[in-house]
Length: 168
Length: 341
Image 1: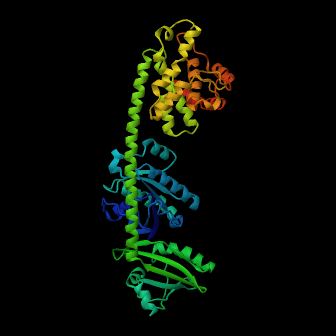
Image 2: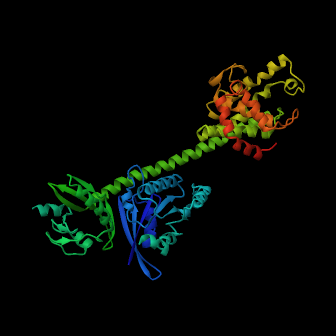
């Protein structure tokens, strides 16, 4: 069995834990439950003829009380940079974290996940900004942990055979 | 007795061996048996690789810490294993060195972790509430600003009924001024103010008699003095409020005919005594009037205009601001292309 470590990174209350819960347990709860430290979840997926055990590290959200420890990303096949589409500044936080990770560990595969797509009318993140990021080569997903939109595809993106090459 | 005390603290103590394994120094615990899937007793040896992904990661740092052989401790930070018999168990590990001996302590955090979660939950809920309030304040500020702008635009519309200046001229003046503000690194709200305030520079002309304002020929000295009063009238119209947009409009209306060398009017202000917003408008007003057609003159080529204005930088215009204006000419041309007469 191939093992693949993925990290969830982003500001607090953007839905990192909810995305993991939706992906691993197909559950969503509306209440916000903060994460302290790191929560590690596992999910086995079959890619082609291989079974991949995904080790998903849900890192505590970034804020004044909690700072990202880049050593947590050691050995990762990649990371999910999560922002909340309804809170524009969480995208700034996410992009700053990406810079910190790159400075500490070099280039690691990542995707930008703009969560809370179910609240699209309340979105603050500018469409032009998303397009500009995509133009710069950033893979962007709009997701909803609440209704499950795009959640499988985000993790499948990493579990694809291309990503496995990075993981091995 | 020591083992009992350690058991009560819900932790296990191990020491690293030279072959990479660990020796259990304390009694095992239910959760440690579940984690390692092994029945262990004090003194047992165990390999910890693949017991926990998080612990594996921490052991990289822990081994480096032990190798330094200094007194102290390295904490892993709390982590939660969610796949232990379907439960979610919080742990924290510590690497210690005491009397030259290395230890690994793994603690089941239980209630201490719940306390941490509760505290952080309260703090973060507070931050989220603050964010919501801040967003509401921003929304209301934007609504107030929109109303102020609407009033300013109505004022401008009233003034334009008596002024020969084109609507596109005054719009461009606002956009040019805002572009200079942005190039100077102004806050977006200040640049937004000048975008609306600059077009009001000639608003005082509303108080100039028709016989002078609309006179086709040259003004007499007396008429010219009356005409100069449009600056003071405009300032009186816009002043006396605590609205930043109108205050800036007041400064611009009063001072846009002042000159850098002090030879302007109405007060003969000099250099930086002239408010910066008025110095900006002095530049863009002249530039726009010269490069565009007027009933009394053909448009003058941009290069010629810039040469003429460059000669006046330091006497009529603030030389530093004129350089900033020149540095953003591509943006100025773009505005001219967008807002045509």
